[in-house]
Length: 123
Image 1 (spheres, one colour):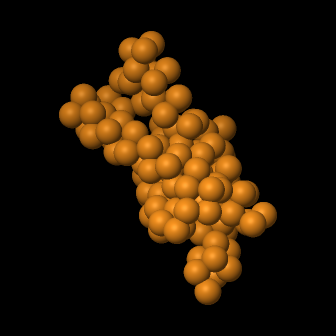
Image 2 (cartoon, helix red, strand yellow; image 1 turned 30 degrees about the horizontal axis):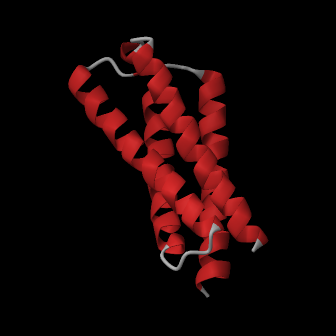
């Protein structure tokens, strides 16, 4: 149960932080500072909101021990990892050193959590 709580809180936190980040960026109309091209930005932000929603739902379902929660959570972890790796590529070339360090650390935590959860919870 402890692993489910830790994983669920991580997933909910990742989803919430991502959604709040993009809501703030959109409200302040600063999206062009992150991704210059409007078409690319639209799809990037849409993908991040889908990831955020599934991460929050999967984390809550995992904590509540719903039977489908583990599957949504593991899928959301894959989306989170993809979003992090994509963000490393986008923001790494802009030389945002602190953001890059946070993203690399987040990627390592996500990979570790995914492996541990898959081994312990699935088997």
